Length: 129
Image 1 (cartoon, helix red, strand yellow):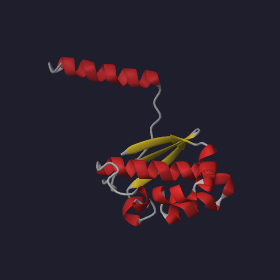
Image 2: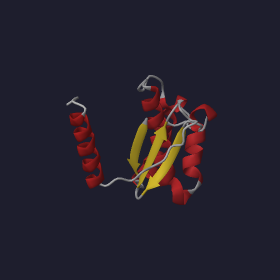
Image 3: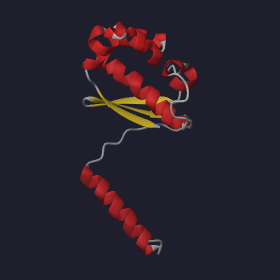
């Protein structure tokens, strides 16, 4: 599972002003982590949120339980995830294949078009298109 979130400072205000609601979304560990460093709260909110989303996508279950029950700091989840900072965005990847290294590769639009055209040409050569 993969999730991407823009780092937004308005999430900090929402979290502080809606602690009751945040306790339905985040575990106590996650709330403490987000609020612990004032100058990093927006980044930490994005890290925790993308961690939850990536985990749920990886499991393929959707939101079938309260989000606060998904604690990204539990070792069974934390060992499956890797987060990256890309400009103003946090990208979290979650995989059950933890023995494989997760790497972030930045591609331009031209790179993607080139890859797609090459795959299409390869399929045409093999008569599968």
